[in-house]
Length: 82
Length: 223
Figure 1: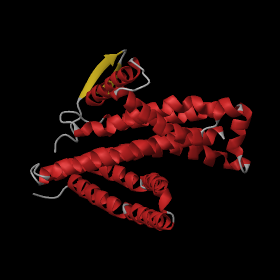
Figure 2 (figure 1 turned 180 degrees about the horizontal axis):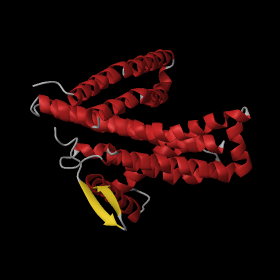
Figure 3 (figure 1 turned 120 degrees about the vertical axis):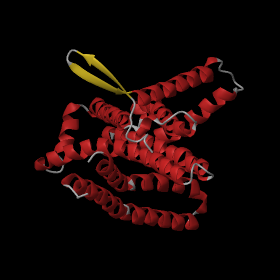
């Protein structure tokens, strides 16, 4: 059995999905960790505001997560649509 | 694993066009709407000074969001408070619906989240025009220079895309991870914990983020 053009397209799409997800997860990982670290520092300095800080941190992290979500959507499109 | 590519649909031929409805999304949205209507009736039917269970739940919801909305919106735009809390309740119930067996999340479908994103976008701009007047609203687009107008318009439109894709991607990603891992471990031990994390925790946070962003968009337009 030979490898045809359609197989190559499928293989390239799956590989592209893996690359998109792997590279796209770096940015949100670094960003969310940075936000969590800063929130830890702030809570250590000011423990009374822990509730407000945690809420703000979670909202900010969820917003900075969106680039990772875009790469997830791109990966899903590559796997299931191409 | 076949549930991902197999989307149940109703098709309806009308006047030469073929309308396609995602039946599962529609039915689950109706389930959520029905649950919210029942909750609304139960929590407001017999209002008393010493509240019952349903009234307590409703009061907790309202008081939890009252402070947030009062911080973000000024006196004239306090009327968007019911909208904001309704969006929260709908999105939250939609996100956690997947933990019940036999039900699935309506927010797993991009159509639902895109609908909510467009709703928030239109209401934010309507509120902006109502508060500032059309001239002042239109002048915001040529800040700081007139040739920045295309960038400002694209920036506004990308808010809709980002808010709806964020909710969709989180819920769909959680669903896929639950499905794949359940398949790998033959549905032993792990799925309840995954459901608790992706359904309850991520679902609650994403519903809160979606609501806060809608509120922030309204607040930015009306400032």
